Length: 291
Image 1 (spheres, rainbow, N blue to C red):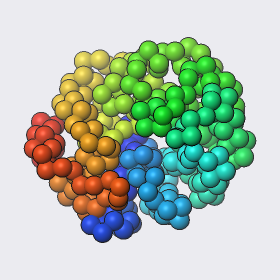
Image 2 (tube, helix red, strand yellow; image 1 turned 135 degrees about the horizontal axis):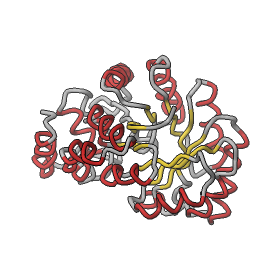
Image 3 (spheres, rainbow, N blue to C red; image 1 turned 135 degrees about the vertical axis):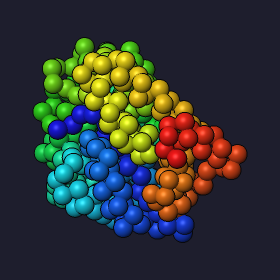
Image 4 (tube, helix red, strand yellow; image 1 turned 60 degrees about the vertical axis):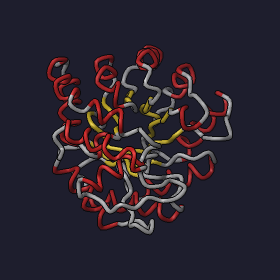
């Protein structure tokens, strides 16, 4: 069920910062038409830190409702509070998400033992497939491979989104964990090579603006077609870089608005993309033949 190009979908907002649920529904349809393999609702790219608890739950519900089982939906339900993460995960289970994605607890910097107990508690509290999410550049804490290996023994912890961009980390996790444990790249620039090492796909920012291309690249990489995957991925390389010229999702929201797919809104403390970066993103879209 979970492989290929998995979009970390943005949460469309009006220019005043209100969640635009109709645009969100249209965006889900766009991804289904463009062959996106699965959708992550309310991940980092979905502005999870600034949505209210009610909005967080409603965005997940709307994405699931609109998808109507045509594409798997993974709900972002992580928090630096274990009880809050359990509550969000329980809601996702109730509205019939296919799985949950739980980021490492940020800011409070738990130990490896604390991370293990946090994720185990979430898994034991809610019987839904759960995917770990390691992104130390944002959270300030690194979920180490030996801890991932311990967590892979928990029956409903099925995989990890590994977003360090370190290919040796992908290999290390795969070597330590039991067969069937899924590793997903969380770094578009290295996703192709991660798949050749054994990752099952990419939980992607670039897939927001180039969903069919990312689907094609992942599909080719998964069958071992290095030349074919490279030919698709090379055209996306500027996007992989420049979609992070400012904090995600600032650039990708600008690009999606430029493509006419969403309104321009974003929520404070994030701001609109600085004008000095507009030409850079515009040229990346042109290079990928998206404009």
